[in-house]
View 1 (tube, rainbow, N blue to C red):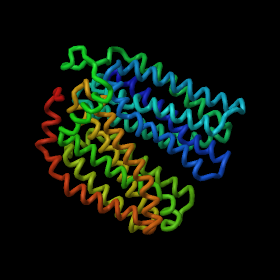
View 2: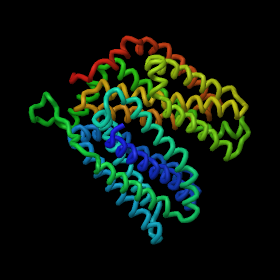
View 3: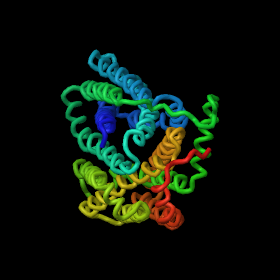
View 4: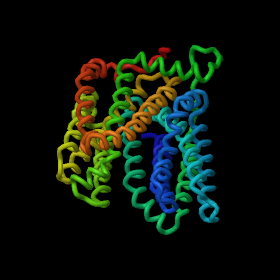
Length: 408
């Protein structure tokens, strides 16, 4: 891997670590000040909202400006906002409203930072190294945000409520410095506008229209949106399943997510070799079956160890799918549209998560705790049956053989 990618990877991993610390510390801060479930859950909702509001226009911004400079500006702004919150906590003049406002602004920046980072990857690594690079990015994210930040964030919050937020401000600042050291220009120009700039809505529409014309990328985006609905519904009530059917406490419940994170880390470590060996076609197809198996296991199992193993396998699948999906998008999308296409995928993914979180509770409340898992199982089977032929060997092989072309 190049030195430029090493700086980008380190910056992304540090940024993910800081974000993970805040993900843990924010609900702890809120729950220490109120027992109102609506107020506590609103903090999570506020953090998700920017993806639904700004993901699509953020993609336009990514395609208009130098992506490296944009990431640096976002990180410095996030460092300032998080630092202000930490100082407010130390000074005793913080509030839940201030926390929610800062989280909203931080995640608004994330809607531009993440697609910009994804769009930079093809410019800093060779085309044949995309799977390995994306595997490293997924691995760094998993290790920092889900395996280190969880216990570390809780420990730091106990020491002092402000420390996780100070640490997050520091990771954003370090990320800004590292991205700033990545050499080169990362501003792309549209080959067909001759200096003419479209309105934001027109550019969003152009990106969506291009994505909808690409059968494989369109199908992958819809797949992720649908499966995120069922996955979010499943995880939304997993704590109840763990308590009522698996008969485990808080530690056991948390360990289920650790199993998933360990699987994801393993998948990211060997992802490029697995994909090369079994092909992207079968990586996607087997992944669809793993989705169905996971929901079926959660619907039937009463043994926590069985569930843990299946969730670890699911983690491997999730990492492989992320690597394949991101790499295909980077291979097939013209450089001047990569920000918008990446943002469209993130918007669909976030929409699925948001809808699934609401659906899980509704289904469990109406039909029982296993209802979200049976629905997820049926949806996964239907999705597998209807999309199986889309990812045939010839189509996927062509994606790996041909460079992206500028089709509008």
